[in-house]
Every structure is written in structure tokens, then in C-alpha cells.
Image (tube, rainbow, N blue to C red; front, side, top):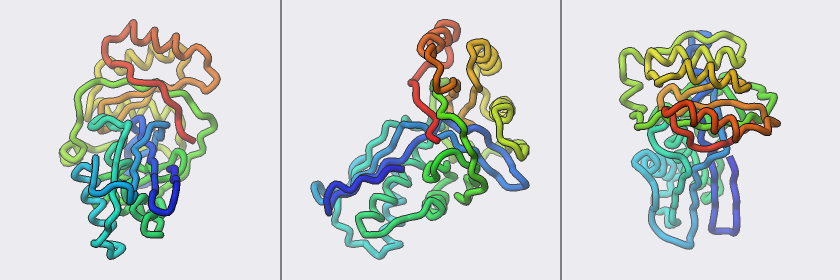
Length: 268
């Protein structure tokens, strides 16, 4: 999260999105996801330079109303503007980033501040959330927003982001009777990333995923992850890999699906 205060009546908050999750399942009996934060953002601006509400969807508007109620600021007169680089329905935490950015920008404009844990609780009052409000990679409960465990990421991996197309309704998917994830091991590593992605094939299958994993490994990639409730997948390369563009071209040449979106980095 990045907060910029330009002058007394303008506050800007940026919240990262994700490339799906590194893993999702149950950890010691508790539902968790392991975040995959990337350098792509939703941005909320609260200012007296403009009036009204711009760019907020239904969930962000609900968050705005909840925050104003918490602080007793129903007479709030600042303008609120939301923009995002994150496409909808792809499993990139667009809703979580939008809601958290709006909540924190409004809070700052009122001289307040939400902790990551408080943002988690606020977001889960509206829908299951991703842990984008925590710094770095974490294991967190998507139903309560509780931080379960911080994960030490040793390297700022490059991530080639690919999209299988279409959109996923997260709320509808969460209501499915077969939307049940496996139990995760105590140790978080890239074997777990692969196992979690493959286990998710029974819930939200992605075409040619195993073939993509094999091909990526042959290219020297570290791992392939997926959005467990979305349409994207990420191929992880070492930070110092100077041939990433060439390797992405090789994937694009050999696979019609998924489609390449962008190259980003794991935000550690």
C-alpha cells in the first residue's frame, strides 16, 4: 500500500492487486489463501478539487458507506475517485484492492487510519477478500481477513501474467457446494504452489495447465500459479533472468490459450 498526501485536502491511496494466489486451502483447520501481490494497482483519491463519487462499483460504494458510518461522517463533502489497472473477474483482487483503497483514502481524509487487520475485517463484511492490505506475501483467512502467517519471500520474482479468458463471479463461485480446497502443508514452497494449482483443476479447470507447467519448467521457470477463483495464471522467473522476454515469446508461440497479459513482479 502506498499513501500520498499532496496537500491538506487531497489524499491518494494505492493498493496492489494480485496474480491469483500462491496457494489456497486449509491450514491447521482454518481456510487460508497465500497471497501473490504484484505491482499493478487500484488507486483511490479523496479531494476537495472535485465533487461526488467517480469510478466506484457497488462493492466500493458499500465500503464508502460503511466507513462514513464508522466515523460518523455522513455529511462527508469531499469527492471520491477510484481508478484501477486491474481487470474485473480475473482473480486479480480487483474488488479487494478497490475497497481497501477507498476505505483507507477516506480514513486519511478524516485524520484516521485503518490497520491491515481492520481493512481485512471491513472487506470481509462485503465479500471474501484477498490480503492485499498486508505487506509482502502472507497467509490469511479470506473469510475473516485474519493474518495467519507472514511468508518470507527470498526473491522479487518476475511474473509473466497470462489470462485464460472470460470472467468469474467470485460470490457465485464461493456458493458452489464443490468449492472446497485441500489441506495445505505447514511448509510454504513452490511444490505447494504447483500442487495447489493442480488441485484447483477439479474446481475451476484451466485448459492445458499441466502442459503449460511442463513447458515453463523446460524454459527454466521457477513455478506456475493460478487464480483459484479467477482466470489468470502466472509463470515465475528468477529476478535476474535476462531472457524472460524470449521465454514469454516461446510460450505465446506454443500456446494459443492462455493469452499473455503483462510482465510484473512479486511484491515482497
